[in-house]
Amino acid sequence: MQKKKEWKMAYLNARQVLPPELLAQIQQYLDGQLIYIPKKSARRKPWGSRNGSRTLLQQRNQSIRQAHRRGQSLACLADQLHLSEDAIRKIIYADKARSQPSEPADKAQP
Image 1 (cartoon, rainbow, N blue to C red):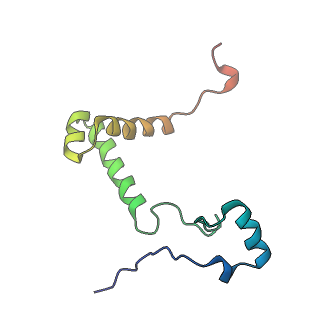
Image 2: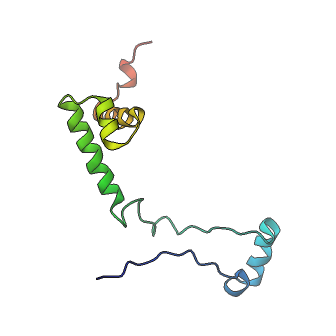
């Protein structure tokens, strides 16, 4: 059985990893406070891509849309999936908003 990799946030002592000049500048803003420094955006992975959550939600949402197109009610879908009717409605209508092209500005009604 493969061991699952644990992700822990490691705290580092800034005095050990930063040049003294930079540490002094940071202390002017955050003297003694904790700060989170995110990864560079180029190295960040999109939400859910590492563990498959994004794919699972996309599949779930697709099945919700298909069931609704087949005539299943919002209330029934909400009950089956333990979601609110509002959440089901957002999933269904978000898809419709994405699939409909927006009206060009020059043809918009005043």
